[in-house]
Amino acid sequence: ADASVLADDFQFVAPIVGPLSKGEFMRAFGSFKIRDAIPDIKDNSWFHVDPLEPNRVWFFSRATGTHTGVLNFGGNKIQGTGAEIHSPPQAQSMLFNERGQVYTLTVGYCMDKRIGNTEGLGGVFGILKAVGKGLPFPEAQRLYNPSLRFEAFEHVAKAVEASGYDPTTRKRLPRDAASGVAEPMLGS
Image 1 (cartoon, rainbow, N blue to C red):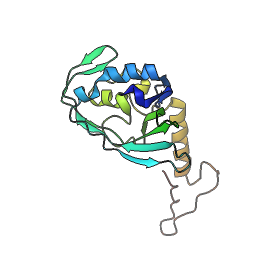
Image 2 (cartoon, rainbow, N blue to C red):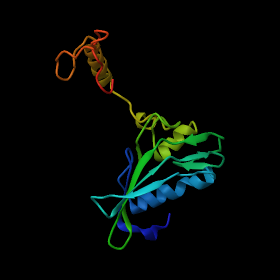
Image 3 (tube, rainbow, N blue to C red):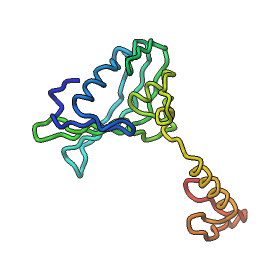
Image 4 (cartoon, helix red, strand yellow):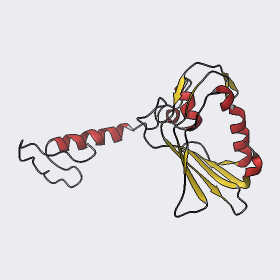
């Protein structure tokens, strides 16, 4: 990365990592050597200027590639595995100052965790997951790790709905005239 395009007050922000300062970002990003590790990487990006923040450009990507080279991460050298990487669609953005320098870079926000082979993880965490080297903590295993309490809540809500009630309003659901079965709610 070219440090001259980054503002002195630059911040890198991802769902799990950050914010990182310009120096922290340059050290981390420069050490990964993504293009060496995945020489055929295609980010498959497309861009839009934010209508409410004209100094922000949103970009979306669905990176693909094959891990054939050495990936550096945290002092470890991960030899090429031959694994294909199919990232989920991710949202990113860049905010520009009046000098045209990037002062904020957001990356890795997964838009559909069902797509790809990274368990919904974006950025470098997604690459690590796809090559079989996911980090040993919950945030780096899959996008969404629901708590036991939330899973119980979800199961109770579905059971209530299956019995013919709307779990949010506690009112009876309308019945399908043909079958007499309560019509399911959207999203279930």
